[in-house]
Length: 206
Image (cartoon, rainbow, N blue to C red; front, side, top):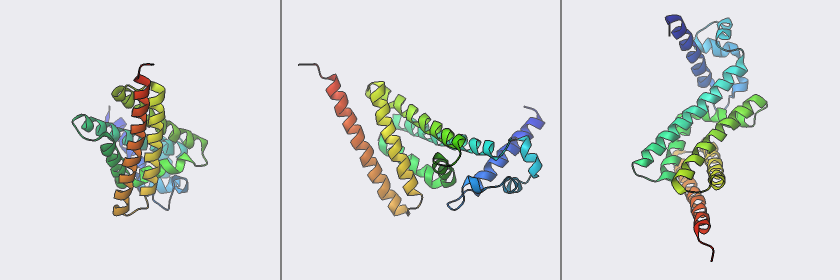
């Protein structure tokens, strides 16, 4: 990559970070203006168009990056699990740490999931499907469950965890710990039910 290309990529990265930094509990992406993002990034508004067609393209990039960041963290959690430890506890703790350390990213995913833009809703839905698909692969490989049953379990688990993450945004540290404990118990109940289902399936017909 040449110097010019490196500089362009650096400016693009600065724009992405500038947009993320302006998101907060009281401000969604739809409230950001191109001029504000450009000013925060330290570039002229006209230079914005060298990197993104419009604010929607920037927003879709934020959604993709947010989802990818979280998926990478969850993959790392599963790798740690391979060395010993509770699958569910480690995963929930990793997810809650992400929400705590990256509230703006998680708020973006939550808000755009039900936002007015169809393109944003579809992008967030794709990210959630990526989570479900990766967890389905993991459950299928580790439990031996049929693909369809692993998918149903994964879908339920992802739904519960995302809901807990949304609640955690407005909680104190103590409340978050209690929420994490409840979430772990809920997921363990789902896993126990899935295991019972697997055992029944494996039993020979009498």
